[in-house]
Image 1 (tube, helix red, strand yellow):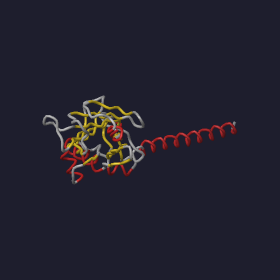
Image 2 (cartoon, rainbow, N blue to C red; image 1 turned 90 degrees about the vertical axis):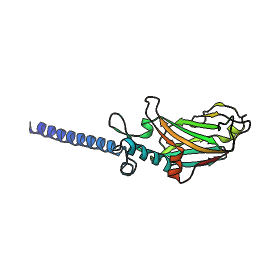
Image 3 (cartoon, rainbow, N blue to C red; image 1 turned 45 degrees about the horizontal axis):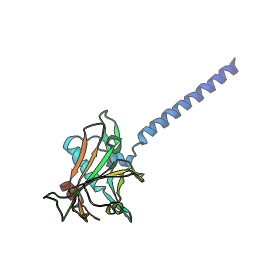
Image 4 (cartoon, helix red, strand yellow; image 1 turned 30 degrees about the horizontal axis):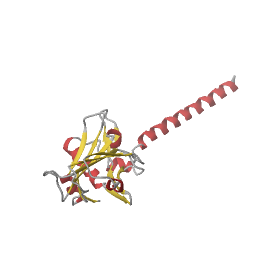
Length: 210
């Protein structure tokens, strides 16, 4: 009987230790989903209204990166933590699934309207959690096509859509970043950074040359 009680005691202790370990590691994983450095620097979950909009605009643009290759140019943005409608902390790309970059051409116009280019793709978190994966603009492929209004779809790597409007007979070579937009297909909520905010946080307009 004592032997049986001893075995039960050992079992109960082992169970308690195992339960505590599982509970502890689960809680740690939940907390560590957002690293401490991110929580303190790029966590905007406590902000609302104008303060939130200002913080988001600054983060998106200050974290802006341009990565060039022989085939084209990639545009990355700063990432941040945001509070969703349920009061949960989530990454921006978990809340907003799409990114749109709008450029306006300089030095040409059609019937008084400047040419525009929209680059749209999926909002994806990069390996560096403070960055949004770059949207790649395949400039070489675009220049191989005849200029015309409409939409191009490129599905290699990370799929993107490129929409053009008011194009002249030849491709414009200088484009200015007009706006950045994060939005979701599931809600009407979005964040938009206008050209004056781009110049404000970068200290200069962002120019793309083909």
